[in-house]
Amino acid sequence: MADPNDKVPGQTAGRYYVDSQCIDCDLCRETAPANFTRNDGECFSYVFKQPETADEEVLCKDALDNCPVEAIGSDG
Image (tube, rainbow, N blue to C red):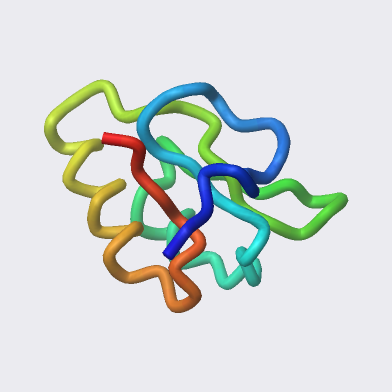
């Protein structure tokens, strides 16, 4: 389970976040490319845009549900 007190830097404030457990597997970026991106220097993913549409919300939820290390969290 993702820890809201351990969020990686650079994220857009909002419901979804990534914590330091991220292993840079690319699943979230492939699942929801409009919302997740990669920090190339530190090699982790983060939320650069919170979902704005129902479709984006579904894709972010799918990324959360399928993250192999449970590094994606939701505050809502």
